[in-house]
Image 1 (spheres, rainbow, N blue to C red):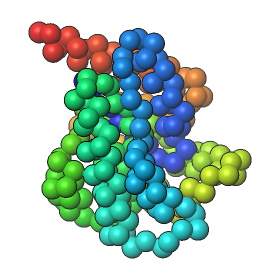
Image 2 (cartoon, rainbow, N blue to C red; image 1 turned 30 degrees about the horizontal axis):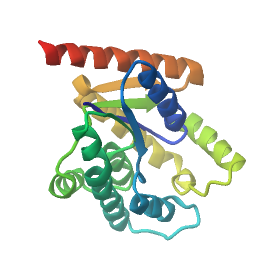
Image 3 (cartoon, one colour; image 1 turned 120 degrees about the vertical axis):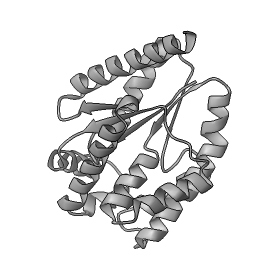
Length: 217
C-alpha cells in the first residue's frame, strides 16, 4: 500500500487536515493508519516532549538532528514498515522532509549529511506521495501561536524562532515539491480549513486512483 506524508510550516493546519483526509480515505474503503513525527512510538513521543517544549533543553542543531533521526528509526521499523507490509495506507504528519527543511535549511546543517544519515540508519525510506500545505510564515506563525495560547500543549519551541528561519523552511519545502513534482502535491493552506481540506482530499484521492490504475496496467 502507499505511504503518504503531510509536510508544512507551523500553522499550516497539518494535524486537522490529516484527520479530515484519514476520515475521507477510510470512508472510501482504505485501511488507514495515521501517525506522526516526532512520535508514533512511545520512544518517539518521549523525544517529542524533549524536542518541542518551549522551555526544554537548548539542543545543538546536530544533537537535534540525531534525536529526530533516532525517533524516526523506531517509527519506521516498528510502525511504518509493518503497516505497509500488512497492506495498510499510512498517513504521517511530518517525515524526513521536515528534517531537511528545519534542521537543514532552517538550522543550516548540510543537506547531504542529513540524506546520508537517513539512508544509513532509516533504510532510505521515502514517501510515495508528499502533500505540502503551503502558507506564508507570517500567517502560519500567527495561527500556531494563537493555538498554543488556547491549549495546554508545551510545543512552542519552533514558534519562538524568527521569521527568517520559517521563511527558509517554507522555501525548502517548495523546492522539494518542485524537485520531486511527480510525487508531490502543493496545497494553498492560506484559505479556510474547509477549502484547504476539500482541495487536498480531491488531489490525494485522484493520485491514489491513478496509482491504483498504474499498478493494474
